[in-house]
Image (spheres, rainbow, N blue to C red):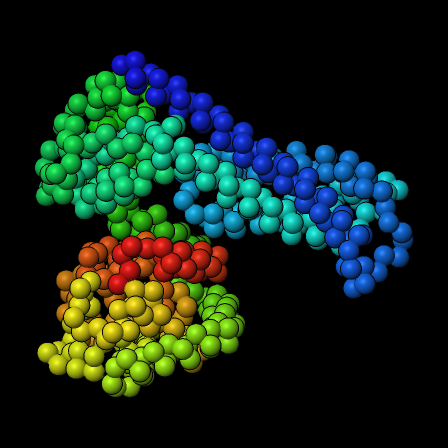
Amino acid sequence: MHSQVNLKSKTSKIEIFLPLLTIIADALSIFLAFEASYYVRFHTDFQKIFPVTKGVPDIYGYNEFALLVIPVWLLIFQSRKMYRLKRNVFILDELFVIIKCLSIGILIAMAMVFLLKGDFPYSRLVFALIWFFSILFITIARYFVLKIEKNLYNRNIGVNNVAILGVNEMSKKIYDKFTADKFVGYNVLGYFSYENCGENYLNDKTYLGDFSLIPDKIREMGIQKILISIPSGDQKILYELYRICEGINIEFMYSPDFIDMMRNRIRVEEIDGVPFMKLKSIPMNVWNRFLKRAFDLTVSVLLLLLLSPIMIILSLLVKLTSPGPLFYKQERVGLDGQKFLMLKFRSMKIDAEKKGPQFAKRDDDRYTPAGRFLRKYSLDELPQFINVVIGNMSIVGPRPEREFFILQLKDSIKNYLERHRVKCGITGWAQVNGLRGTDSSLQTRIDYDIYYIENWSIAFDIKIIFKTIKEVLFSKDAF
């Protein structure tokens, strides 16, 4: 019991220390942004591009204004809940929020200048630089704070004791992921089951007992969170959980299944006074399709130009290490079921599918000498940027599949054909979450694809692209 109290005490200290450290880092970053912006504007060759016509103002005017702005900007961050223990594992998860907050903040700062109506000659160009440097410095500072946070959790400092309720496939994924990834900050003590919960995917894990024991185990083991993963049809368990844990300080976190996510997306739309529940809608309107296409085209053309030397080297590598064509052209099914030829650098022998279509395996003996290397780092996918330029693929989207496999899977995998509602992609939300190859559940992959389709944004695409780079360079699961 003493160790549990001691652990809770350490956790409480971390819950104060990390947000406070983040606040201090943000404040210093904003102040440094003011200093850097002043220096760049008035004391560098920047003056040659934008000449200073009204003389160089005293830096103290900007420093004093920075002291007024910092509390306001910190309040903006607080309003977006940027100072709680996030347990994020990727800085891009909050970069876009930082940009939004600082965009609002710089507008407020400029309004403050106007309202104060002082005689100090503030430069609009300096404000533009402050916006840029604030984003840069705060992002860098938060990256290092995040590293500190993850390091503390890896050393078992400040972690939360958690237990899982449920024994399904998602429960197993949560258990395995949080047990392996200590930097998330969760110490998984075990799992609880409940009556008629179906097939048990956690038989080899630590069993804490039946559902009814949860209140006693919370007190006995110092459990701080219950991570819930139950099918949508078992919602009565949630009501009972609330009842038996009444008066106990505990946090419940629910991982919804696909049906729950669908319910959360239902919107009511009124047409001529008649209310309609929109159960399914077009993923992207005309404007969003235009934005995505413009983004895809711009990024793909730039990447093809930048990567052309590497692609030339890879072309020579493919041709010199195995007989056969340079590109592997394969018919795939994309948007609205339309077929197209997808391009890849050939990574397998020319007779790789003499026995018919089959999925690639981790220890596949069909790879060419260079093919395994290409596949491991996804370099065989680079020619698909040509597909993107042509317009039959996107950079981000569900991975395209062959008709042979689609016909096999469309009846056995729930909502499989929903992935054809958007253009297929070189990378996707499922892939950056480690769901690729024969080792992962196809149903789970489809659920991730559908989540992407229903929650698309340019920011989401950029996040997936950055996570793809990280996955390609550091993932142990690539093959």
